[in-house]
Length: 115
Image (cartoon, rainbow, N blue to C red; front, side, top):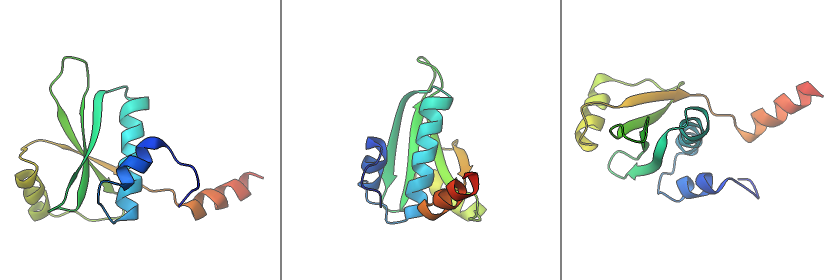
């Protein structure tokens, strides 16, 4: 997509997910957890059976590990899908982080508006 990208973005792309939107939202969530919230031990993972990228992180150095599921704000989510994710990820609790991906075209359009 881009000739140069953040190392974490490149790593997330290599996890096995084929959905470009999900990869982008996962990267945005990763940056938010690392840089904005300053969480500890942020790791991105991929569940092949769900075709889902999710993140694990600790809010503080001594807090328990929490799961975060990046979810595009444009996609609906059903209770059945939530139950399936809980079962596959072996977790009754996780946080759904919604986001809107900024595509290359959208970034270029925004840049033209600023100039």
